[in-house]
Length: 121
Image (cartoon, rainbow, N blue to C red; front, side, top):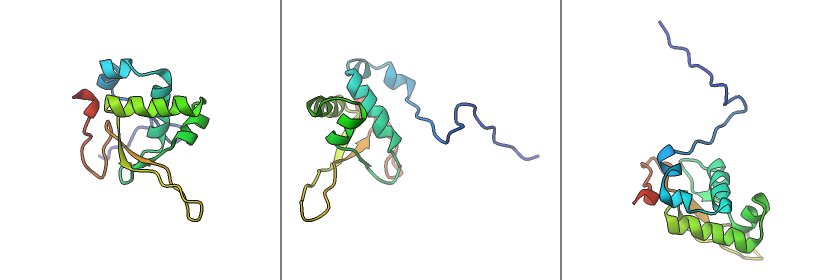
């Protein structure tokens, strides 16, 4: 007898963002600003196991929406609370292609390694 995978009713459009309950119930998550929490969701929507998430301040300010300074503060909050870790610094060059900072989301696997869950330590 073969097992048929059941389609979940909340995944009809091709994707779901799930946040672990222990993370939501943590004091660190509770102390984050609303902008930082929204930024986490947008960053997770770009997450892939094999590459770091490329997400910059300008994109965050546009998506949230908020001022660039508020977006910078949201990134700083997430770093200080242990939810994200910078993998590679941004690069701006007018002659070549610029790139935004890349981030590792500590509550999700990265490069086939288990999540480090720095926010829990």
